[in-house]
Length: 304
Image 1: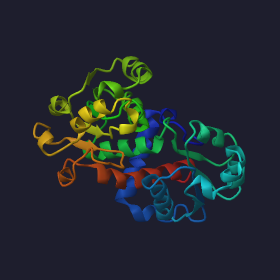
Image 2: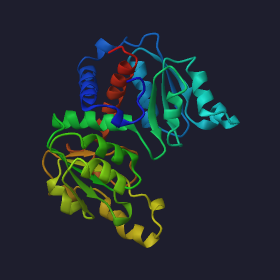
Image 3: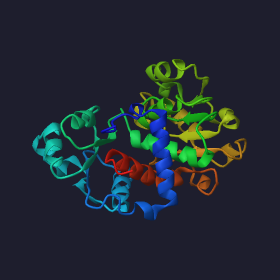
Image 4: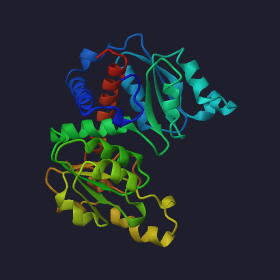
């Protein structure tokens, strides 16, 4: 593995190795504090990000490395019309590894073909966000202790959510996975995602519109935002938006060991009253994001 562009580049064995390394970093941070001494990470963020960019920077600094980069396209030469390929060729002269977010799908792949240093896709349009999926997987492993035989509920915008598509792809390879797909008709999982990952692997699944109906079955609930801008009809949005707000009341029938995840940022789809519930893992998920990115940086640099 030279670069990471798509979660499906990784075998389950490679995912297990990254999760094991991330877990060891959590347990023994001092062992890794100087692993990247003298190494430089470039964070090239052509669109805004809070968690992902700071998580990568925190990861590299925690390994003893240094960070350079930009946080918006307007502060780079892209504003002058420079191509992605030329930007990457240039930055590859300054850094040992690159984390890149770009609004155009496929831009990180183009970048990886134009430099000799490893490139990590930190999100490309609605396409891929592999390090978010690795974050989700490390969180699931820490909360549940395993990946097998889990019923995963995905709720909200399942049509446009790149984090949802990537998690379905990753979890579809583990034994005994079941999916419950909870969304309005307008925001159902795209057919290509169902065909490629769910049906092809003969994974049991159901599609429902009612969150409360699905709740008692779930081991994991992955919440996403129902986005007003995705609806053609304002009435449909108003009718549906409150159906997918997670409240303590809706958790009454949930399993005692349910794990609630959210890629963040949230708007109103999880009530703040849920935050103190021990099943709410979304802020722990943010923390795990730093450790799995540390594991990925070490692996791509051959320093693990």
